[in-house]
Image: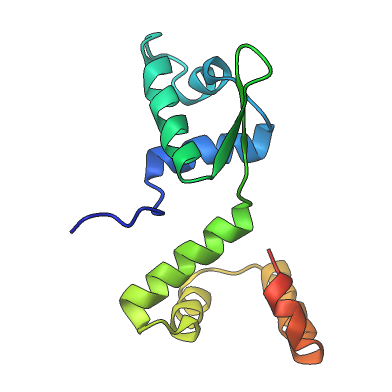
Length: 135
């Protein structure tokens, strides 16, 4: 089955995660982090991943500098939301509640995690419109 154009494979996601954590980076900087012991030819691999992400409009390239600087144009929260919704679509006919319930029940949540979830639910109960703005 062909991949949807906006899917993010693991290798592209690794690049995005570095851009979210580090901010704008060159191909060489990303290569050094992603392939610290690899040969210099890995620059071409990282460049190809960046080209794909740029085509998806998930990164932008600053062409005013050399070497080019790349930065994420999509927020981590947006990618999480899309990925969770895609999983819910596949496994739960689009419903998020069964997916989230399963995650909460099967994962070991700390006291702080549970308190954070309670606070979030209370906030959503008091102000339902705020749910659309959570990232």
